[in-house]
Each structure stands twice: as structure tokens, then as C-alpha cells.
Amino acid sequence: MLNLCQIIKDDLQVFFDIPFDVKERIEYQDPVFVISPHNELDELFQVKIFLRQKIRLIVEIEPQKYSAAMMESINNIDPGKRQVFLGYVKEIQSKGAKIEFFVNKQLRDIRLDEIWNEHWNVFRIRATQIVEERMTEEQESALMREWSRLSVGLLLSLLEVENISETRHSEGKIYQVIQNRYERNPINRELCLSANGYCCKICGFDFEKVYGALGREFIHVHHIEMVSSFGGEYYLDPAEDMIPVCPNCHAMLHRENPPIMPDKLKEIVEYHRAIKGDKS
Image 1: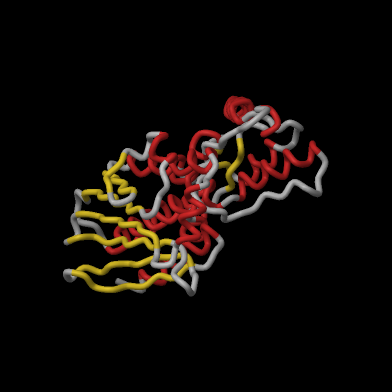
Image 2 (image 1 turned 90 degrees about the vertical axis):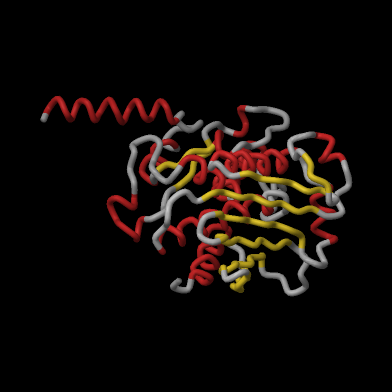
């Protein structure tokens, strides 16, 4: 296969905006891709992804050898990060995959609060999906890229990838900064797009159909509600609270303050399309 190792690496670095190490090795005659965020001391996590005999996709995720600091971070995550993590779990399951969680070497139901109240010394995650049809090289590459992003996003959702600072802004500005950060956060963005696709949810524009490979997987994402409208604690669900939109529709959403609701803008688009159709 043409340099799939490099393709996966480049793909992850574009999506998550951090450096990755991706290595390829052979196990039982199958190529295995070993992925980790770049770190010289093996302090984070490792993802193994491979197709067993071309019929079963297998993903295995474990901490690296010296990951005590990462484990401490996971043991102290806030409910918002937990919700995004479970959003990734839900998205993986929606693709027909079986996913298993081993916490402290015991198979556990990760949805239970009691699991998160325990102290994690070690974990292992394993996901499997049956591939029903023989794939072309291009389809196999797309599958490996998709699952690499999902697997990496799953773990990054538990870690501090981006710090949100509110100290230099007025109260009103804080909400806008947080909202923008929600939209730009690569972990939220990946989950939103994995769940909702790459077509604009307002006008239906598909960049790949118009621009071919150049437009593949290009789209903006938009936070549907103003953060300030929730009050108190608010835990983001990227799959439900964010939608893919083209840059034009994104700009129109923000023509008003607070932003126009997507359903309202969609009605405006459809109304003017109907008028244009009547005149023609």
C-alpha cells in the first residue's frame, strides 16, 4: 500500500494540530500501524490499528510505559471531558463496532459513574468491526484514516489539549472566546464531523463534489447555541451541539448577535431558492 503510514500521520496532524509518530510493523502477515502523539519519553498513549486477514478491523489503545502523569490527569477529569469521551464511544458504536474497556485489568461498563470514581492505574480499550466486503486500496486507506482519527480523538478527549483562558476579556467577550474555542477545538471538531459528515447542514454544499480531492473533508463547524444562553455549568456534546456549515452559511449565521439559529437560516435559504425557482 502506497505510504499509508505517512498518510495516517499527515491526516492526524492536520485534524488535531499536534505532532504524531506513526510506525508500521508486521504481525501475523498483517500490517499494523502504531500511533502515538509525539513525545520522547513514552508518557502518553498508544493506538494500534490493523485489518486482520482483511476481514476484521481491530483497534487497541493502551497507556505508554511512563504514563503516570497522563493517568493522574484522567483520574481528575471534569464531567465535560467525560461527556465528550462518551460521545466518541457512542459514535464508534454507531458504526457497528464492538468496544470493550478494561480498567485495572477488569472488563467494565464505562458508562457507569462508579467506574469514573475509581482510581485508574491502567486501562486498555479494544474495538472491533467486521469488514463485510472486499475493499479497494483507496477504501482501505479511508477506513484506516477514519478509525485512526476516532481512536486518537477518543483518548485526546480526556486530556488537556487546549487551554481556554478567560482572564483578559470582559464577561461578554468571555462567552465569545469560549464559543470560538469550542468550534476550533480539534477534538470537538472531529467528533462533530464524524457524526454529521462534511456537507453543509444549511445549504447542502459539498466541497468534494465541486472541487474534487481539493475539497475533500473541508468544512467549518458551528456551535448551535450561544454559550451564554445556558447559564451555570454546560457540558458540550459536539455531535449534537455543533454542526458542519460552509463558510458562506457560517458568515450569515454570525450576521446577527446572537447568531441566527441554523433552522431559521435554512428556512431563509429554502425560501429564496423557491423564489428563484418560480422566476425561472
